[in-house]
Amino acid sequence: MAKILIIDDDSIVVFVQQKILQKCGVSYEPLAFKDAREGLNYLQDESNEEKDYLIFLDINMPSLSGWEFLEKLEKFEESDKIKVIMVTSSIDSYDKKKSVDYKNVFDFIEKPITVERCNELRAKEDLSKFFK
Image (tube, rainbow, N blue to C red; front, side, top):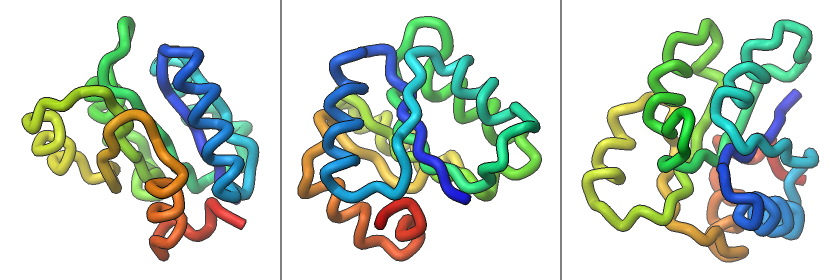
């Protein structure tokens, strides 16, 4: 089973991302976490039946940054089943270059996510299980 998570501390961004993902035909209702630690706790919860995750992750968050989240994620047993799309307002080219250092990062998108960009993701074979 596949699950989509949105991890971003901005409520408006989360709302917009959920609506765009739904419009693009995601298979499941995206779960949202305003705190990256909550997202990690969800992923570590052994009662979850989901094993494949697609995470839309913000970089700049107050308690745990997207980079710190990725470092912790790499230590998970089944981290190979987790794909991360970095979604950020950062225009720093260093961030995009740094994202390729993490094996879970599948793509890097500048905010806001658009329907067109979402449809590009939908067309990628590796992500097809997350869409209808």
